[in-house]
Structure formats: structure tokens, C-alpha cells
Image 1 (tube, rainbow, N blue to C red):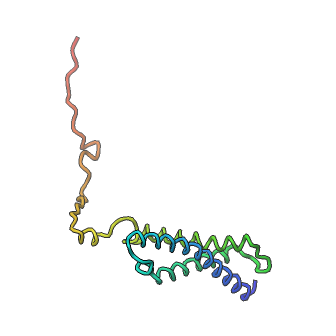
Image 2 (image 1 turned 180 degrees about the vertical axis):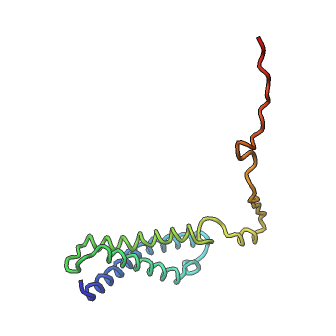
Image 3 (image 1 turned 135 degrees about the vertical axis):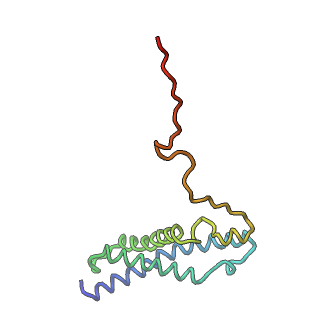
Length: 151
């Protein structure tokens, strides 16, 4: 493929990734609206434009990566290939955001230490010492020794 063909494939992937992410955004906006209404807020109070733009960028990148790895010729792109690129934009952002929530401090389910201490909670941190009890066979308590009965 020529460089122009690669640019076309990349652009197609970017656009379809944004389309796939757009479907996810619609669902997210509905959920945010319901949560805002439940807490007596407006959607504008909980909506963040920067999060929307980052989400679209992640979807576009996922779609572009999928396009480069799956499309070999821009002449015969089927509708199922386009749907696959949109699905890559949708699911790729879920995967990346899930990984961020798992590995970046403060983004996952575990509370931030500063937030917990600000609420006045007491935190008990276990000592990093060895586990209690014997660790090796040599440290096991000795069994009582009894003599055998004589007959």
C-alpha cells in the first residue's frame, strides 16, 4: 500500500473509532443525567468536557490501531469491517479505562488515603514484620518424648 492508502486507512479508523466511542458517550450521558437527577443536580454540574474529549481521543486511537492491523486494502472495505472498527473504538476505551482504574492510584475502587484521613477515620496499617508462628521445621516446638513401655 502507498502512503496515501495508509493515511486513508488511518483516517477511516479514527473516524470509526470516534463513532464507536460516540455510542458509548450517549449511554454515559444518560447515566450521568440520571445520577445527577437523583442527587438534585443538573447534568451541567457533573459533566466534564475534558473527560468527553479524552474519551473521544481514546476511541479514535483504538479505531486507528484496529484499522492498521486489520485492513490490508482500502479498495474493498466491507460494512462488517467498518462495524468492527467502531466496536474497537467502543471496547478499546473500556479496556484502557479499566486498566487505568486498576493500575493508576486514585482511579480505582480503593479510596485515596488522603480522602480517608480527611474524613477523620482511623487507619490501622499492619507491621511489615514476619508472620506469627514457626516458619521452618527447625523452629517447630519439640514434641514431648516418652519412653516406650517395657514388656
